[in-house]
Image (tube, rainbow, N blue to C red; front, side):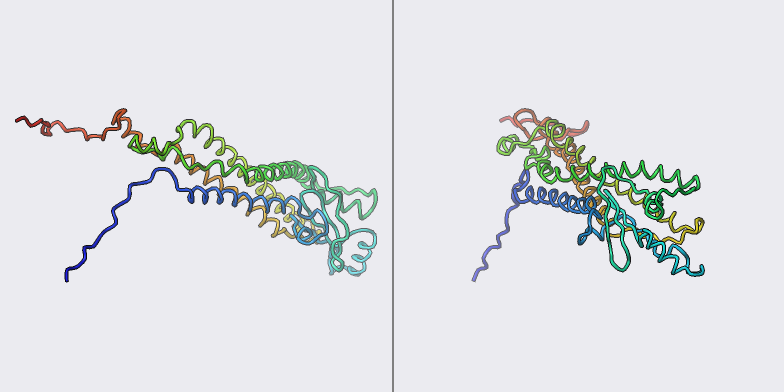
Length: 320
């Protein structure tokens, strides 16, 4: 019995352009990254605004004053209880819009009214609650640090608000940056280009790819700079309060949840920018071989012939 011939699948002709599923996958990925970043940015913005689940546990910095008088001091427990009775709370937490205060045994008791361009002034808050109208002589470096913290807080507030707005807008605009007919889909055969027309490269780059590159860059820049400013500023606050030089006996803790939220958002926006950067490079540099073949082949799309060397035999036409 003769064996049946083995049929191999003929190689398919390369498809120019992108499949619908690939285009849809790219668009969903971009929107998904911005959606994740926006959710975490919203949690950063509304963190510590009120005494509600999740919000009361999302803060930049927590200052614990429950043991402001060292236990080595005689009657330290009594002094701490007196300080509590005249208005000094056990802890204070800092958010983007306000601060909250409370006691270790009862939790948060009050949150201040949200303020635009809010900045945290711990000395003013503590002194206003401890003794009404009291003043305190502070070292010059602390006063200068508070001035710098005020400017940094204003920048941090503005950058977080701008990044949240831009990220929300990019959820809906970012899919438009992906096209099923990018410039790199051009083919060496004009007939294929007629059936699958590609965008003009310059038009696609300057009116589509480059504007989205600017938007994604600004969104990532605002988010990352705001996260860096917040991280550095509150690390400095923590080190000042816990420093042994001032002997304040105050405990300070960074909000790991808040830090995680804002850096996850920064990472998602940075990844979206990298994707758009790759798209711009592909749109700018893609399809060079096909364009060169079309240019050398002429208007009729003739195949490109290799240039003959100086010692190559001349091509002759056979005559009968």
